[in-house]
Amino acid sequence: MSYEYDSYQWYEYPKRDKSKLVLSITVIILVIFLALILFQYSTLLSEYQELYSEAYSLKSEKNSLLLLVNRLEGEISSLKESYDTLLLRYQTSETLRINHLIADYYDEVRSLAGAPFRRNRGSNYFEQVKFMAELARHSLGRAQWPVLEGRFYEVSGEQSYIMAMRKMGEVFRLIDIRDTDNYVRKVEKILKFIKSNIHYVKDYDNVFLAPLETLTFRSGDCDDYAILAASLFEMAGIPSAIGIFTNGTADHAMVLLRLDSLSPYGFHYYQDLTNIGLSPGKWILIEPQVTIEWQYDPKWFNQWKLQAAVEV
Image (tube, rainbow, N blue to C red; front, side):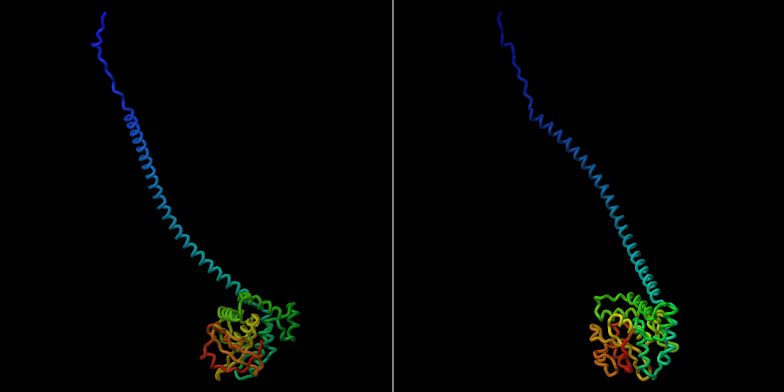
């Protein structure tokens, strides 16, 4: 038996390249992953655009609401100012009102005083200004006419000057003078209060009104202004006097304050008035019908010559 090996042929199959397979699989995976990323990106981009659109819409709404809020705040502020103004007017009106009992008392006072209770040009200036000072003192709680107090107490159960002082205290609180205010600031506030609440009206018979009467009527002439202002200055701790002046054709009442200065405001003053009975020191002239910034007016003040003055 013989074998013929030459008749057999050997074949070798090629080996697969594994690196190419791995690369192919990797590419496929990357493609799929990229596709997923692109899909996710597209989805997120769409959501972002929607959110951006909503954000823009919300921002527009926010701006509209802010405009509305600002407008409402303006209206609320305006309403609050109106309310505060009306409340202040009401409080002022209630505070300035007096009852008929004290009004009747002042009528009796003028009847008792006789001639000095009214301003008569060329008559006894000292007696007139003395009566004006007494009216101012009464509002500060100082007894002035004892002969009338008994009957008033019987009727009211209270002294007239105590009632007047209590009412003036309520008025004084409206002016809002504080302990930290200097004298100039106090003068400024008092004159502003008078200017805001009292208007000038000529008297029919030139009677002198007590401070509470002028406040209740909310009007008066020059002497009524002077009596009221002097009492308020005294309440603020500023020594004051009431003076009667003349320019040759008319009489006029103003206030004098024992102060060294009204700086930074301009002012007119007397260096000394001891010759007419006032305390030593500089006396500043005050026109109570105008505010503090108008207290320096040479054309107005220089025409008046002081005839008589009495300290409150």
